[in-house]
Image 1: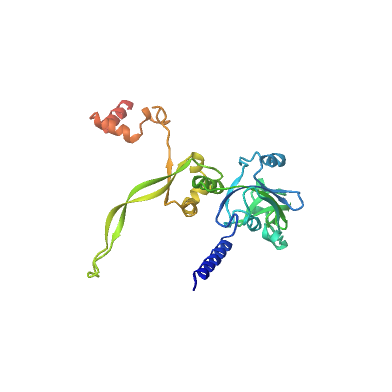
Image 2 (image 1 turned 30 degrees about the horizontal axis):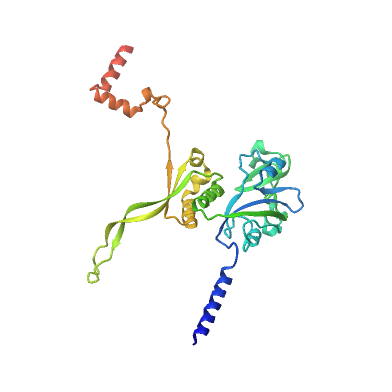
Length: 312
C-alpha cells in the first residue's frame, strides 16, 4: 500500500469518526435549558422555568424556584421528543416540540375510572376534584353521591398532547455546576458544594506468591488520591424526604455522572452561645450531672434518701 493510499484511509477513518460523534450537543452532555410547556390546546400549564409565566399562571407561590434547569441529554430528565430535538443543537438554539399524549402522560383510559366506597376516603377529601389515594393508587374524585365516589385514576393530563417551547441556554462543563444542577433536579435545592482532591489511606490487596496457592489474602496500606465532592447539608436538605429515602442512590448517580470518586456530606451544627439546651440544668444532660456529682464525691443515692426523709 502506497503512502497516498494510507493517507486516504486515515482521512476516511477520521470522517467516519467525526460522523459517528456528530456535531453539536450529544447524549450525555449537561445542558442548561429554559422551557415552557402547555397542553396543546393552550388551556393548561404543564411546566415552566420562566418566573413571569409562573406568576401569570398563579403557580409562583408554591415554594418552587423558577429558573433555567440543568439536565443531562438522553437521561430522561425531560420528554424524549425534546431530548431528540436537542441532540445536534448548539447553545442559543430554540424550538417547539409537540409531544403526543401517548408519549406524554398516556392516553385516557375509561377503565381507570372506578366507583369506590366513600369510607375509603378521608372525610376532609370527600368532594369533587379532591386528590385522593385509594388502595395505594393516586387519583381524584370526579363525583361523589352518598356513600359512593367515582375516582379517576388516570393522570390529570392523560389524553393531552403537550407543546414544549425550549431554548438551550448553555452547555455545562463545570463539574461543580453539574453536581449542583443534579441536586436541584432531585431535591429542589442547591447545597453549597465543592470538589477537592484528597490523599486517602486505603487497604489494597497484595499479589500472592504464585507458589503458595493456599496463602491467606494479604493487604497493605497505600496512599491514593481521591477526587471528592464535598457538600454542606442544610436543615432543608437533611429533612428532605427524597434525600432521606434515596441518599445512597443520589450520591452514586452524582459519582457516576460527574466523575468523582466519592461524596462527603458535612453537617454543620451552630453553637448556642453557652445557653445550653432547653429543659437542661446549666446546659448539661443527665450524664453530665452524674459525672459532676461523682467528681465532687457526692453520693446521689444519699441525697435522694435525705430528701425523702425531709418530705416525711
